[in-house]
Amino acid sequence: MTESGSKLRIFKILKIIISSLLITVLLLFTIAAIRTLSLDVNAGLQLAHWEKTNNKSLVIDHHQREELLANFKEAIRIPTVSFSNTESNTTALLEFDRFLRKAFPTVFSSSLVHHELVGNYSHLFWVKGSQPELVPYMLLAHIDVVPASESDGWEAPPFSAKEIDGFIYGRGTIDDKNSLMGILQALEYLLLKGYAPRRGFYIGLGHDEEINGLNGAMNIVRVLKQRGVQLLFVMDEGLTISDGIIPGLEGPAALIGLSEKGQAAVKLSVSVAPGHASMPPRETSIGILATAVKRLEDNPMPRLFGYGPEGDTFEHLAHKFSFPLKFIMSNLWLFSPLLSRILERKPVSNAFVRTTTAVTFFNAGVKINVIPSLAEAYVNLRIHSAQSVEEVLDIIKDTVGDQRVKVELVDGFDPLPISGADEKAFGFQIIKKTVLDLFPTVTVAPGICIGNTDSRHFVDLTKNIYRFSPAWFKPGDPERFHGINERISTKNYEEMIVFYFNLIQNCDIRKLPEPHSSVHEL
Ligand SMILES: *[C@@H]1O[C@H](CO)[C@@H](O)[C@H](O)[C@H]1NC(C)=O
Ligand SMILES: *[C@@H]1O[C@H](CO)[C@@H](O)[C@H](O)[C@H]1NC(C)=O
Ligand SMILES: *[C@@H]1O[C@H](CO)[C@@H](O)[C@H](O)[C@H]1NC(C)=O
Ligand SMILES: [Zn+2]
Image (cartoon, rainbow, N blue to C red):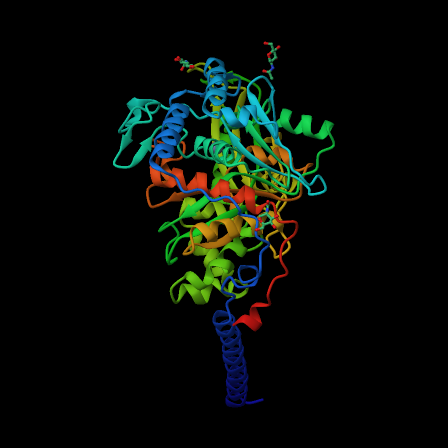
């Protein structure tokens, strides 16, 4: 074959490759465009006919407003702090118990409500339904808060509940006394108006959520299991309504958490023979361990964006993004590799892309002239929905790739199961309807919690756990969570009460309506 002949052939092959690439790109683009244009705009159940159950309505008058704000402020002023894994302010927990009985006299005296203390400081309420065949549900909230100190830069002392420009400041105003007080205040008003639920429900208030719920939530679960209780769904804190927080998203979004990331604490250790610093070996235990830690930081866990509920979030919200984001979000099947690379640049969005690796302890050495025989580091991992503790441990061993570094699992749990969010998912649809009735401009979408809640202990009682409360988060607000200047507007706190007031009644429907086909409606 002559040289020019082979050139011609290469040229022909190239032409074929380029044109087939072009055709493929064109085809993908067409499919993507069709998907973008045919976005489902929340039709279905929203247009369906719901059985009417919201027979009581709540219009908050001047007197009620004063009363409910006074109750809420008093709750914030009781410093129910969990100081450490073993230490809580039990004086404050006892005071909180007395306070609840005083603030909600109807809840504590109604013949429909059975109340008991669990684990000394946690509360379990059972509100009897008139139709025992309807499967009960459960609302959760927690009493304890993380520590707070005024000297960290609070505008008002953290246990003062001071009101500034329409906001109540204080530890617990968004985590989680707003849900706790909102639920009980709503129940107090419902009972005062003569409401008797058809569907029975439980309310669980844990006293040690911030330190893993081992005495509170876990004992509540134990009690319910002994009684053979199964729950239709559980609703706990977690995600909120975010407004102006997700870049490119137009309008507010209520994300309902379908799952939580898992966790693992892993210990890395290196043991060598001790020696004198005057005759050091080429590598010390510190050097070996430092190299291992560096390898973990240089080699993050694989990108898994789109393999967990976070993919659903963006697909649900796609129609609310501006172009070209709308186009990208509605075609994650094509763009998720590209999107992952954008999201991983910031720590806050990287958390949705993968299992994160954080080295949190590094201990070695006792004396300036002694080569330490032992070096230890602890790694805290937050596990993506598409991985397990075991898989993550294997990857760590591979990445470290050094037999001298011992890798041990200290403790951990897999990511939580993913709750239903389709048209048959009772809890999800009830929460969604209640949000949309109260806030018609909000888009509701499934989400994932990167932190953990008490509800993770409830997996044996139900398949459907939802993490949501209707607190509004605007730019700057997520940092208040466990941070300084935690606050809620008085308006938003009232909305929370109305939300739970309506939610409880909405749960009285016997079954979800048949969805209208969105195709016919459009
Ligand atoms: C609400 O009122 C309707 C009649 O308007 C009645 O059929 C329904 O049973 C009531 N719902 C509840 C939960 O009491
Ligand atoms: C514990 O709570 C009580 C109020 O119930 C409070 O007086 C006390 O200062 C708190 N203790 C600590 C160490 O914060
Ligand atoms: C509850 O209080 C009793 C008596 O003070 C104590 O023995 C028990 O350990 C406490 N239980 C919890 C869960 O704190
Ligand atoms: Zn919380």
